[in-house]
Amino acid sequence: MNQKTEVANQQNYRLNVGIMIVNREYKILAGDALHYPGEWMMPQGGIDPDESTHEAMHRELFEETGLLREQVRLIREHDEWLQYLFRKPQYKDDIYYIGQRQK
Image 1 (cartoon, helix red, strand yellow):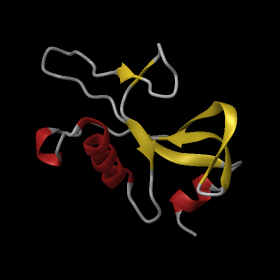
Image 2 (tube, rainbow, N blue to C red; image 1 turned 135 degrees about the horizontal axis):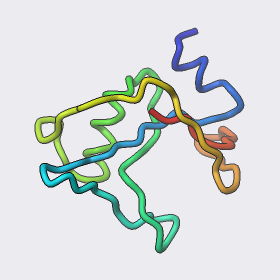
Image 3 (cartoon, rainbow, N blue to C red; image 1 turned 30 degrees about the vertical axis):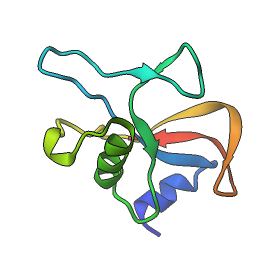
Image 4 (cartoon, rainbow, N blue to C red; image 1 turned 90 degrees about the vertical axis):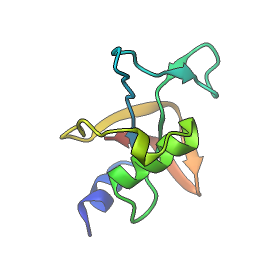
């Protein structure tokens, strides 16, 4: 079993990437949260099976912002997996998740 699978199987946390986009003026991109009106979120999304965190980051970045790999530069990936609980547990792809583990 690989490290990603071991982390994912711990207590039903969904693997996820969170992306902070900072421009040259040090402004951070955040948008209206679709599922939580009046709240703001940075781009984020699940990691597909057999997908690396970097691959997921570029895919999610394009899906949510239209930014291409050539238009961004990765500055740093967090060393640890961070986790948080959902407001209420969710089913996704027939799996019951209580929260997300995120890089």
